Image (cartoon, helix red, strand yellow):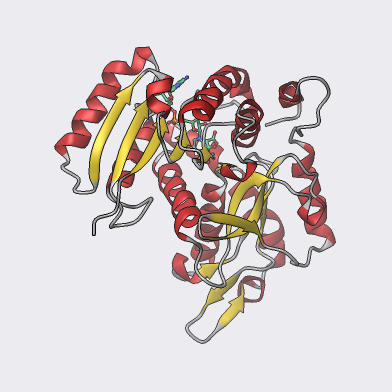
Length: 339
Ligand code: NAD
Ligand code: LMR
């Protein structure tokens, strides 16, 4: 029997990530090859014509799984009944800017969209925030949608996770699909900590630790980390635009694994509400290693953390605002060090 369609909201759908993302969703890359979808696309009035064009192209592509398209500039109409919300709408970083520089432009957007989602989305709607600063925008969304379960609000660090897999695969000349269990700790910013201490490669002859295979600690402890941390800026420099196809693909991976589960023995990185695991302050949105089952993520517990990692995990946590900031929790988002 055919499944009921799932409604997926993409905000900023006329932008470059949106344009890459909606066909991926319509082809089943996000929710599976047998899962029909109805795509809700939101953008702002100046982008209404472009949004109309994206809708026309979705129709023209004749995707069998696509059961409907809503294209609107009305946030309430966009949020009605959605089961998954991918929050891409916002102002992208340009060359020379840090991700925090776009924050003031995005705060008011996130407040309004949080209330609309709270009132009109499906009660168990899963939210993925992509727009930068992603961790902080997710926290704002959480603060302004207080009845939303906090486990349902996440942000994208899967792109960083995939970048780390890609770097290891290039270095070792192995297939990226055979590299597993890297971790991105912390903020989607240049202080994030890409950690390979638990990562392995499937050699066809069993799993081997990445550290043993690479055998070059100076590269792993320095250049590998900065390359992943700075990859977004490197792409902006090369393309004069921020990453889009890899961001869209990673957003699909994030929701796919959250909804459909992570393979046994494998974890992924997601920005989630901290419960204090690994000594990370509760109440910040921080990227952890997680496994997913039956639509729920859980932080992987019991990993050994050495002194080098501890320092880096704490440094990236320090950048992030908590819900316990004085007076208005949102004021905490303006901490000058937030990226
Ligand atoms: P873009 O400028 O091409 O598109 C953004 C779209 O958002 C535009 O169409 C714009 O009209 C729309 N928009 C602006 N305000 C809106 C609002 N209030 N409601 C709905 N839509 C609105 O930008 P992009 O390259 O698609 O990037 C989008 C965001 O994603 C940026 O913040 C970027 O920095 C971020 N990003 C995050 C990651 C990540 O890994 N977390 C990766 C890449 C990009
Ligand atoms: C990325 O990591 O590519 C995005 O966050 C865009 C950016 O501003 O770096």
